[in-house]
Length: 383
Image (tube, rainbow, N blue to C red; front, top):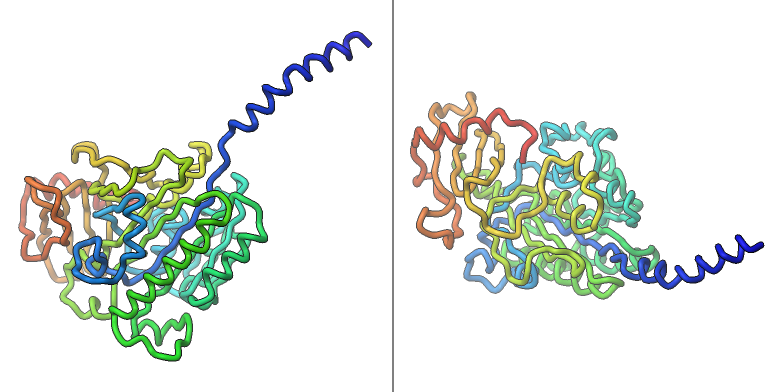
């Protein structure tokens, strides 16, 4: 009896301490991922274009970070989405543009890792290429792959209110370009979209609506916006050798509980779509072991020296591109008909302020630079 009384007294004395420990444990933040395709960086005001469009998207950079040099490893929508969800390059996740290609169940996905950490997960997809037949729904509690863009934000808010925190929601807004709109309809507006400018305005409005409706649903969320690629029907007709289609807009407003970038950070260190999943896992406060299956790295929040940077490997139908810091090289594929590799710099040595993608005419054959970057050609699976 005395032992029981003593034990009860000890537990009673420790109760305030246990309560304080539980109160001090940080709650996992809610997370929003918004993606699109076919949106070139130069179409947005914050990347240098003189336009009144894109300010809703750019606002994420004003309250977080804008990554000046972000790249997709591929020009195809589905492989790029698989890279985003797995943190693995297309050759490792084995998803290609073929309709018969799908994500293997052995792959570990971002929503699976978040679910293990206690997250409710949902996806609202407005592009039939990203349908559940490709197994991109792996790890999601809800995967709505036939959603009208006009109702997407409100549908997601209803789902959020019916599920417990923390939650993770992925939105994919298909590019509202007239030609793409006809091939992949996400809604049937009374007035057809007449121009790229109108499509960008609509995309900007949809993004702003998602942010506005979900930001006040529970804990303030971390919000990440990324393009899967910047290839457009018009760009396909251009002469090959342009880096623009592989360069994507990317913004990250970290949750308040995260040690993410501060307000209006302009990050010039090159990053990849492979870094999205590790960044969100880190923001969720999950164990480092959760990122072991991911080849990417959490986003950098400082502009470090080039010597400390890794190589990014990108691929288009004609060439393999290697980017390391400000330097890049283009290695033509054998069937492309161009024999010599070329290289250049993303920005000049004396300034990192330039943001326009370097033109093909500025490339040359710099033997030393090409030799420095050539090992990256055989480095499969790295971002």
